[in-house]
Amino acid sequence: MKKIDGTPKTIRELFTGVKYTIHYYQREYQWQTKQIEELIDDLTEEFFEFYSEQDERGKVLEYGHYFMGSIVLTADDNAIIDGQQRLTSLTLLLIYLYHQLEDEEERAEVLQLIYSKKAGTKTFNIHVPEMPERYDVMNALLQDEYMDVTKHSETIRNIYNRYADIKAIMNDTLPKAALDIFKDWLIDNVDFIRIVAQTEQDAHKIFVSMNDRGLSLTPTEMLKGYLLSKIENDSVRQQANDLWKKRILELKGLGKEEESDFIKNWIRSQYAETIRERKRNALPGDFDIIGTAFHKWVREHNTQMKLVKSKDFEDFVLKQFDKFSQIYLDLKKYSLTLTKGFEYVFYNADRNFTLQYQLILAAIDPSETKEESDKKIKLVSCFLDLYFTRRIFNYKTVDYSSIVYNVFMLSKRIRRKPLPELLDVCKQEITGMEFQLETIDEFRLNGWTIRYMLHILSRVTDYIETQSGIPSNFNNYINREIKNPYDIEHIICEHHDWFVAEYPEKETFDKHRNKFGGLLLLPMDKNRSLNDLTFDKKLPIYFGENLLAKSLNSDCYQNNPQFKRFFESENLQFKAYSNFDKKALLERQELYEELAKKIWGINKLDEQLN
Image (cartoon, rainbow, N blue to C red; front, side):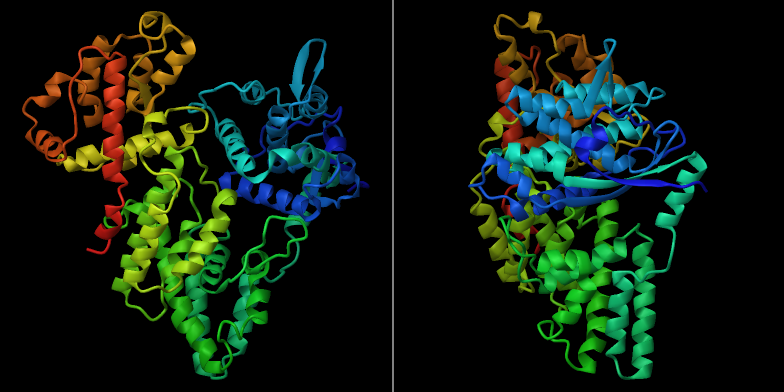
């Protein structure tokens, strides 16, 4: 291998006047919400180590630096061998900052790190000519335009969705007053080591040597070694070792880092007392340290955890580890498969809410029966569904970074609580929320709610059908991997000129057209075939679909006794329409609001204990 060149570079230096490419055989852009949350959490935590509201702009020059690791490139065509995920994600973060900044010079400074123009042709900092749709999605985000990515590749879908994550997380994490200083810090104080190899073969050798050398013990292995070393009896130690190995193997079968995620959730839920505050010079709390070095935290807090004698360590592995790891395995199963009685775990997982595992485990008492634990799982997962939905209907984000502090504090409140007390706490939290379900009349489809609308419409549709004796089809409604997935259908088609009598202004028309009550679910092929059809032409097609769509057609109310019995007993104002005008839309919006109150009403908490 020829000599390699490794140079420290800031984000400004990495992205100024430089174009990167990605070879066709490289993996897709695969980052999910979790990785974006971790990236932003790492960056903002470091930033808030130095930032103070009183700081003048120039103070940022004295702030510390943050190291983002290395990237590996080829010398001939600047191809990224290692670092694509981080560089793409940072470009999305720069696009977010570009849209948030108000000063044109500040925007221009960021813009030149995102793309450049030569001979009238725009190219982004990561330029992949073989993938023109990558240009399309980046351009759509830069222009703040909607793009339908459902039929595109994994890379395009992930880029589009991760940008939505960044918007939601950053809006709740970074104060507006800190925006300019954060931008300065990000582009000049966040560093990489750029490693350039003379040949592509050398670049891959470097990548392998950086990622596949040595047999360093993981935190999980070090925790195991510590716990077992404290068990004096040889046969008991062997029994504990066998159990540990068996369970860790099962956890690893769930996916990469699942065994580590379980231990973090378990220790945080049962023992953590503090969490780092988001302010300058704030120290890491138990929650934060457990997230990075749980093996060290357990060793240093063994007394707090009542791990003193050999018997304590025996029980910790053979009883607590056994119980909590089994519950975690069950929770992961419920999160992947809609399981009767544990539906709410699945619903929360569909919304990518990973903090549910910590909160559920916090309620568990190691000494309680499986029946008691199961009821707690049902109750806490139901509480979270009610909690999320109220936030979503009121345009409050449920992203990790925005609610991790509240979830942590709630974890402490419900820790090992008996069922009656747990129920009381859950009810108090819901009734004490500043926003409830009475504001659904303002809920509509937009760039923020699109992440949640499919789930909500699927829940409403599934509720109507199961209450009318039809087997649940929720799994298909939300499944994006089936051949013909469901799309969100606008009952009012996008032709303002057809509706100017009722909606003289296009802005008002767009707002009403996107109202919650004006939306349905339809299979993708049918949804796209209806784009230019009037309502009377759509009605026969609606009748052949799910019950929420059918209910617009008068034929739905003939020979359908279970449906009729359901909506009459619940006093729901279902009715057919021959014309879907503004009055019909507002009536439908009221109907959806009543349905939401039944699906997400606080009485659902009591039902979990029956």
